[in-house]
Length: 365
Image (cartoon, rainbow, N blue to C red):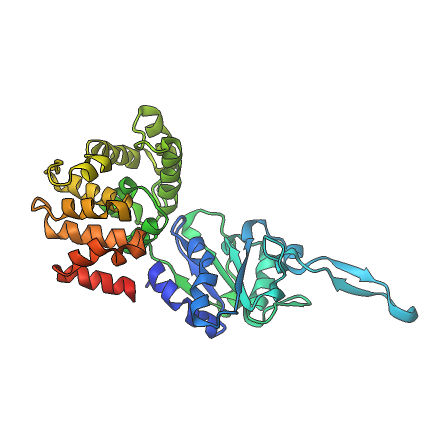
């Protein structure tokens, strides 16, 4: 059985409170690292305002035994006593901005790509997962060791798993699901074309296995990379769909997926612009095909602002749009811009639509 990222996020405060060491295991590019990076934000609402949580990340593939423990060096004895041996303080006791872990109320020492740790380092991790000790070092109060990695069948360089480590942590198998990813994509301002493409090709994107023949393939991670690249080179204009761009995007998500993605981009280019809709919401054309309408709804949610609220809502209330499109628009607009529900135009709209009231209530909560 697997858990979705949304389910894991809801349980993280409980894992932390119980003092568990957890390990997220799943296919490459599924969002394991991303969810771990949000741990401080997920913990904060459950503690006093003055509590501050940190995260320190180690990469398993680049971590050696001495990285985990520090270097053992001789220290002169006092008053003629024999020299003693002490481990230096490991670099992982400080965050990337130089703050020591003891300066926080607590946090997570996150070992990413833990499946690729050398065996000697895994032995040390096995003890740290339970006792929070690395050789002579003990994690500061409130800090736990959490990790994530791929499966052996993912051809990602995983080393042998050790039973003593397995027995000291909670393994959580991560399932890649569309709903969690779409919510994440809206919060991170991915393009409407990419989100709609993912929905249309969920089976391919969330398959959860590596291709039999090695090469680029579609995953949530590779889609994010491709979307970010295309939005970067597009600037304020439409996403490019020329042969060069298609070749480039295929180098991230694979040729078959790239062809389908470019087809989605072409649909987007043929839609009326947001400026046309705002200028004349009552008469601007509405595409007849359902796939084009849904992409247009995504675009409207993406570019929704308080200044455009009246015009966009007038457009969305037209009879050419089925009720499901209005609901989708409202849900996406609220996900991208939570304060949408406070706008007078939106409040008036929700009064005449019970489904919108339910959605608005979920965002208020």
